[in-house]
Length: 611
Image (cartoon, rainbow, N blue to C red):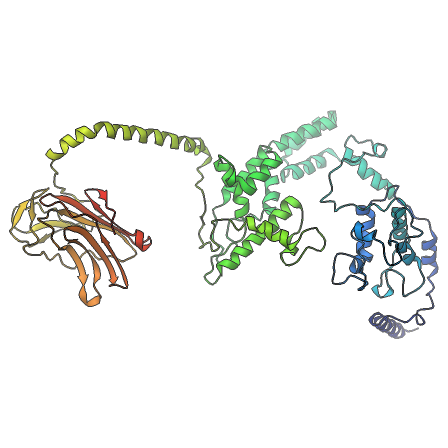
């Protein structure tokens, strides 16, 4: 036959196979059973080697998953038959009585079990798996199912949920003192293989170093190991392993794998991907491995270290595990959406790391293959929605909430400082209380010396100490004079100008933006309860844009105005100034705070409960 003829024959066979898979043939069409080639017939008749004890997880579930679960498993969408669905993934369903009054699996009796009968039948309408699946169990797989049923058809939970049990070591399999080698030798023997001879000392040392530190060993260390290995191999390996496990490289090697699972990164991960200051968490993980921290403590501190009573700084740092996720500061991002994304990420990661489970499926529907419902998923997600962390990180390296972590060499001092500060504050308070009587006695006789070199940060300073002529001051660090009324009285620093007689025009000075921080004020002496500006910078033609310090029936008050009344602050002190007495009045304005917290009036250094 020509090559062309072979090609046509193969194509024709494939088309026939596709046609048969589209529509199930009638019994008449499938009444003739194809004859197996002689090799296949011989293989089917050969005896199969089976384990002495059949395990559901190890031997049976892989068979059921491959051949049966599509129609008789956890997926309700494909489960058959439609009128009475059968599940083989759960014992309560597999052993439930069916329409004939018997279960499909009769424990201890494979011969009468319908499951086994349908594996052997020649009826193409009943045989399992059905022909259209194009799957056929091997003789060994059928024998495993039969022996499993004969031994009682014991189901086992998923290995991740089963209690740990130490298996019996097959002692006859190897001369090695390492129990793991006995299991390996047993499996090799079952396949007609044997263990390799012990590794050459130099290669063994290199493997040991790469396994325990992630780094190749130094030549000198290898040569020393070779000499010790020649004298006492087991002791040399044990000693060298302990030495490597005591190195920082070992802790860093283990931490590297853990940080991969914790999705650690030094940047935010989305949008601009700016730097993220989270490296103290990395160091915490390294130190945890270095100190061989107990697993329960390692777990609790990373998941909830900040919620522990009397929490330490290190325990707060440990919760960096939940801050390693990718975050965004993109302007178009929707905060509520990212709150949900972050909570899902934390559930997925915590489940993968500590439960060894993929729970992400349950964010959309009940998990098909693990006992995790959608309700379970969002019940766990609720824990991670109770956080003060904002959804958008602002591309901030120190995206709050955060804690200050001192350098390692300053940690002890950092712990001591709060106690020392508290003790000093207590001493200061006691000193202030004991000196109060002397201070009250001195205060009426005190005089204030004029300041000849005002604070450089001051925009404007006018001491008003001149007995006559212009008043002199400092504006933006430079000396400046202003003409003033000759009517002057004794003031707290010298001779003070009476501004009610004639105002002083200071010029176009002291401009600030509403978003800035500013303080302004003066020594003021009133007669009666006057109303009017002490000083002001305000433009009537621009909706009174500006600011002032004024008196309203003797009460200090202030405005900061963009437009009146659309965007403005106004504050009134509750009490009038004392007539005939010099008093120090100051106004503070902080445009970075909310409007109701932005302004404050102080009289003689005491904050007023202003309206």
